[in-house]
Length: 268
Image (cartoon, one colour):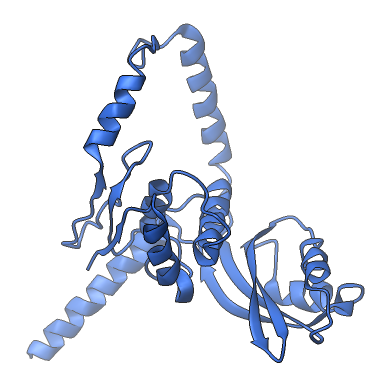
């Protein structure tokens, strides 16, 4: 069943989305999907830090788009009453009946179009020789890079706990983010109350699986000197594989076959 959000350009719409993301890392499911892209596109600008959960989610999706993109199908989402620079809708999976739409305020779009009447840019003109040459070069670069199989990536949420309530959490986060290595990208973070005045740092990171081990990151970097001056311990809260389209289709096909086999056995 599709999830629906209303008027994400208003404070009330953002508040509803913030409450929705309070206990969720993604719009639907346990990994980034096209549902996240639909809602991301419906937000005209990055949300204010006032909306803590929306801001965390927005920065994380931004990071994924810069690193690897998002290709997993979602469960379906509808965004109503928002103005979007380009219409974006979550395409339904081939074997589902869910219908997903992005509704746009037509009167607002028409007014924006009138403001652009003086533009003389021909968006549908023929390609110039330079544009054709540039397109060919890009295609050749993509083909060359495609020869090497891309390593899988994962999205990880860490809990980083301080020693006590006197620990400087700003310096703690700076120390954590100072860890730099190939295949590691730090993402959004927030402070979460634990009790007795103590707060822990929750921080997102994206890793290339063949290059970074989360266990080694914790044991050899985050809990040793000099970072251990601030960090007492680290725990993995969530660990999600960033979906590869081919793997997703293969798993979905296997699941469909298993369900068909189960139905057949039950019928007997």
